[in-house]
Amino acid sequence: MDWAQLIPIIMALIAAIGIPVALSRRKKGGQGKLEELHQHLQDIGIKAIPVDEKQAPGQAKKKRSLGERSEGSMTIQRMNIDSISVISVSSQYGVNYYLDYEVHSGSMPRKEASKKTKMTRKKSPPIWGKTVAVEWHGDSYLAQRLNLDYQLKHRLEQAAPEELKGGISIHPEPKHGYTRIRTDYQLLTRDLFEAIDTIAKHVKSGS
Image (cartoon, rainbow, N blue to C red):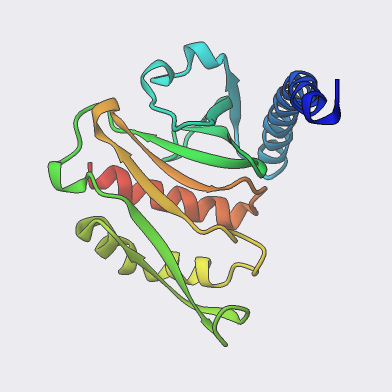
């Protein structure tokens, strides 16, 4: 048997060994991030209660894209944010983690609100400069409310460059009765967490 015949066999063995290892690392990584997030929220005075993923509100109905899954959820007490899920997305480049801050509407949101809304940042100088302004684009009603909240805009503009580096996007899920506010996985300061909660308040008021 020559090398040309051995190569496919070797590649198959590597895949057979590597895939379970990668999945195991993903599982451990996701659980670790969920525990880390829960401890951080406790440290900054946010009451968060981990919930059984199978019993989390709406989990069975939530549509996940290919390679995406929830690593766990927790409910948030006495805030506009109802729950937070740690989301992992795997690709050929590895695994990335995100946070979905979930706002449950309980009923069908207004028809014209079912459009993704995203925050953009203006920097000076461009690309590597400091954020000098933020602006929301997408759903006209929600974007207008967010753009007119100058206290919220000031909080987001004052965020350090490494904070909210992946931005903020708002994804209505009207068929399932909730909206998710997505960011990269980051341990936010209390002030920035309250900024996300303010966004959740605007989402609820537009439902």
